[in-house]
Image (cartoon, rainbow over all chains, first blue to last red; front, side):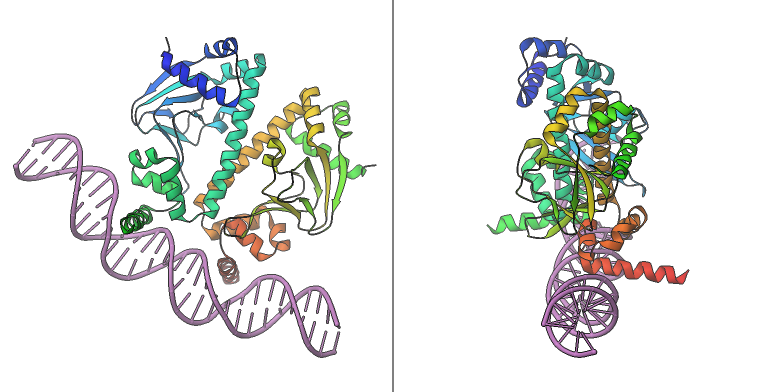
Amino acid sequence: MIDIKAKEVFRLYLKQFSPLSEQEFEDIFIYFKELKLKKNEYFIKEGQICKNVGFIVKGILRVYYINDKGDDITSCFCPENSLTTSYKSLITKTFSTLNIQALNSVELLIISHDDFNKILISSPAWQHVMRIILQNEYFNMEKYVSVLSNETAIEKYKRLLEEQPQIIQIAPIQHIASYLGVTRRTLTRIRGDVAKKNSNI
Amino acid sequence: MIDIKAKEVFRLYLKQFSPLSEQEFEDIFIYFKELKLKKNEYFIKEGQICKNVGFIVKGILRVYYINDKGDDITSCFCPENSLTTSYKSLITKTFSTLNIQALNSVELLIISHDDFNKILISSPAWQHVMRIILQNEYFNMEKYVSVLSNETAIEKYKRLLEEQPQIIQIAPIQHIASYLGVTRRTLTRIRGDVAKKNSNI
DNA sequence: TTTCCTAAAGGACAAATGTCCTCAAATTAA
DNA sequence: TTAATTTGAGGACATTTGTCCTTTAGGAAA
């Protein structure tokens, strides 16, 4: 039996995008299962085919890949109250190049790709919610591209500090650095500068 | 009457993604109009609401925006045989922050957002083609993000030289530079290095 | 407690990139 | 054709970032 609180969190999440009737929500919810991950456990590993979409009830996940040079690059931190999956692997049924790993202890609601598609066909309400969520994913990615190419390292750090302060608390410095597109050394310099400025005020 | 050659080009484009029957294609095609742009004319300008999707039969368009610092940043070059639109403005019916401008003389087939949606509802074939095209757009964006954050300026330049050599021929240096995320000065340095290496061979 | 280990901070120097400028070639206008 | 304008190349120096290394602090194990 799924935790009643988790269910409520998910209900509220969907409600943001589009109202669902009690019945519509229940019809959808029966397909979800609970999944708990301990720190450092994986939601999906490179080389596997991703078969699930997860909703994060609690905790934070890190998405990363190993690039041509062998570096571990963090492409995204998935916060509470959002979806996580390896879209490309899921949709094209190919091996994932991404790893999605729990940064702390994580609680998810997951649905299989097959069930996901089943609901898409049978429920116009679900179709509508998903269209909006996927649109948002796309727009977020556009935003991320613009941040990556326009902001300096220090601006990006300050943005992260403002938008996702929990990340800075729990993620080790090398993950934050690769996410911001700089080396560890540059990130410590930035932290030094930020601390210095604050002490001047 | 739309140029018969343009029609063929579009038919072949759609065919890549999914086969359409002759009738299905004709049913869709009646909604398209021809649009010709001279060099430097706009498909969409910042501040307007984008109402059309365009298929590029001939020519190249540049997508750019003005960032907070007032710089003109090229976010993408749209080549022949691809779609162009300001997705965010189109879908959310908000003012576009993007400009899409003809780099040379351009020939488009355009369809209004309303007609686009009308076909989406009436034609499962069109729905299918569009789902695949939008998925590809998303995957391309992912690819672009990974290139932006992993490759050095010189690697990005070489990639562009290989993948879209026409761009390097016709776009002025500052547009290519902002697209690669560097200044003009860095791009001329890169060109110098590339030329020097080639002469050594 | 003491030792060991790990993670972050930061010093020193090198490399890459940006800023500001000039010059030369190409293009446009008179 | 000549003058004016635009565009790209590239010099000089400043700034930023990377690389490699050492130091420091905090937590885990003996």
